[in-house]
Image 1 (cartoon, rainbow, N blue to C red):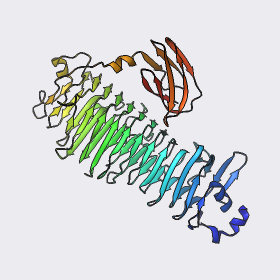
Image 2: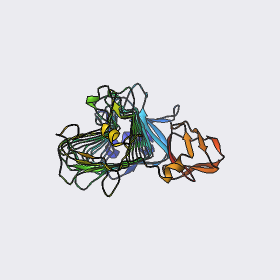
Image 3: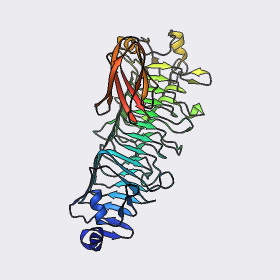
Image 4: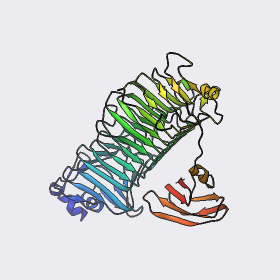
Length: 483
């Protein structure tokens, strides 16, 4: 069949200048169809892989559907372009990789303006990233790792516009940031329950999540993610949601673990408002020169409408070179007011022997009521860890009244149960002070393991694959990472 189709390319497709394009007749193609249609794709029975030897284009009227498991190995420098649509929904996984992983890289995947892309159970390694020019993009339970800087230079996935969604996915060991968008482009990304580790291996001055403005009517949502840095990288931050050219920008950063980066979270530029809630921002201190960075949270807004504020509540901010830094005349932040306590916990943030929980390097006053500034709480001690008007009259005053370190019922119950090591290889310990039971769920909500717990240390052995899981007992809930 392959020879028959090849002989009739004038009818079924175009193979010119070292590339193959589908015929643009409104057809839907599988990998088996393309194998029969063009010599650019063949099946290697020795490795059980399809091999792509030329650039491949899915034309504007055509679609590519991958609903079976397969591996597509792509030769050095070759590019896949989607002008129509791509739908990946495999039972287990569809894997795009290079023909010699770790030695050569294919050029990546280009989703053209007007094209649609949906990926579930998809894996892409040793390519040049995914460049998304259109506004229709969805990814779930997938992985994009070991990407070089190819068709996408701004991130392993780089967006140009729209409201893309990525959830329950992994990004590891990419030369560029994991995800990114341009400073003058409106992209309201929803990024939920993903695992990021050791991205931006080029050690350029970019964070693992490097988003520009959300634009009018959109909100960038970064929630429930684990973002682990490489401590040898001195210039790679955790999360940036910035509008450097004044495009409207709104964000929600909530329930993330951000650890071992140059800094934790930054928002800079102008026309920016948002919420930073209930994050663990820990040991983001790889910057060797404290004057250049190392904040748990950095807000740097030169100009901003007075009603555009950044609410910062319920965060655990520990082990950074600076706790929170607030810079610029447009930096309006709220760390707790008469209505809502801040409930932020600051501990061991500092450099050169000095503790800095909050540095208000702005003329604006800051309401910061109801926070835990240090395990030892007195007016004198709190004043020592905050830089503001009382240290320099050109700076705004910080109201740190009603401070305290609260221990609620949930905190007490959580101390009864421990899960470790975390991350782990699928085998772990659940330590409890009472008889209990446990359940392990994947991020789709599927129950994947369960059992009973005795008082003391309970060894749990599983065959869980790499990913993020939720461990629940009768009293506690934990996020667990299997590496």
